Amino acid sequence: QVDLVESGGGLVQPGGSLRLSCVGSGFSFSEFAMSWYRHRPGKERELVALISSGGLYTSYADSVKGRFTISRDNAKNTMVLQMNNLQPADTTVYYCKASRYLQSDEEYWGQGIQVNVSA
Image 1 (cartoon, rainbow, N blue to C red):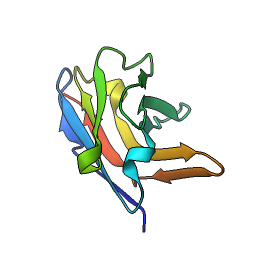
Image 2: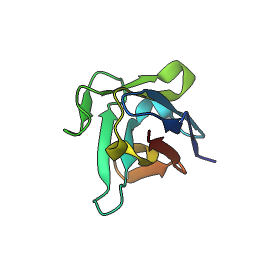
Image 3: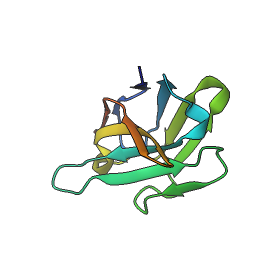
Image 4: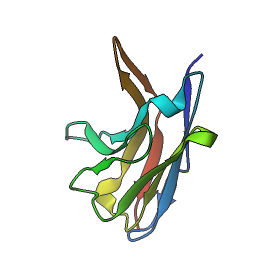
């Protein structure tokens, strides 16, 4: 059974930091690209950050560049999103995703974790 479990969300003041973690199980974690998505009200679902299976390649949405850092530890089946200088516009639910596109498309999603940035 595939499972992606997010943790680390919560309430933080503007300018503060949070560290989101995503732990995967039930699949070959090190063979999958990992990413974080968010879906803010009134906006399209947004790819926030992505990291390749080996961790050598990362990509970020313009809205978070310079503030968020994605990393992974394949030995621990864990991906982390370090979020600094959080702003109210970052408030929403964040989703962890694992993806691999070979002969078939494989995508797994976490259940999401709430991030609230408010004074």
